[in-house]
Image (cartoon, rainbow, N blue to C red; front, side, top):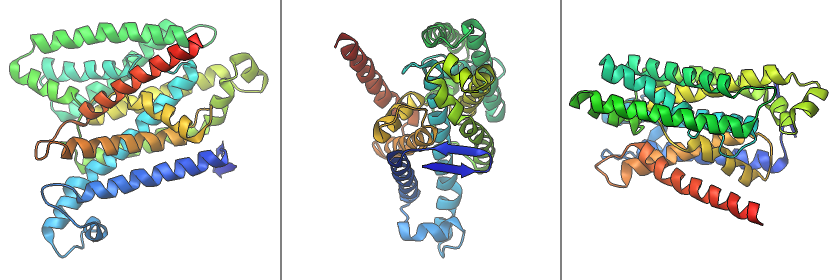
Length: 341
């Protein structure tokens, strides 16, 4: 099935279309449920009116429209951004571990944020800007160290792991040397959370992601062709070097924006593309499916984080970290069994 929207053309199998549609609907349904949950319960039938500010109850308008809606939308957008970013990294590196969580980009974004929090005692806006710069700088560094005539996935991942280890040490040093108040702020930020979400943050992040994801989708077909190898892709007319640089820039920007908005939310970029491919039974990039799956993972994790120990709220990064860590162990064990077999 060929889907065309302006300059963007995507060829998807029937199962991929159906699975992506179902996953998207599930994410939207989870978002709608999240709007009703909390200490102030709102019937789901009242949600549409409250979103428009037309509910008869002013408190309902406030809680749904100002407190929960920006959080839900940001969770969906951040999840989609992480899913697409992970799909690009894994496809370019041809390595299931090629995600920003593993290769250091998320850690680099955290380093940029920690410098702002602990060294400069900056506010939320400057912290987000620091995370953005840190993620982009780490991406450029890893690419320059790993670049060669073609993308060597193993080299890219190993260099990324090394850079991540160095940055993690720097992050620990920053926290240890900082004041108690700054260290507490840093610890909260590092856990990944949507608790401080506002409409202003959501608007900015949504605008940036809606610019970046269409660029990724525009290059989705060349990206899928590149999975067959650089030589074959070049023979089929794909400008391999340019496509790789553009897609890496988009993937790094997506994860940097996501981390800047909500802090490091681990393992979503790693797990979402894998799950999307298993559901759709495809081997290509599957960026739309990865976006929908990432959105579903993050919004579901945020609901669990809010309600599992209510009224105490956990950071969403705690839930994704536990689930993602289990998934990583399963993935590595499965790869080991496959190689032995």
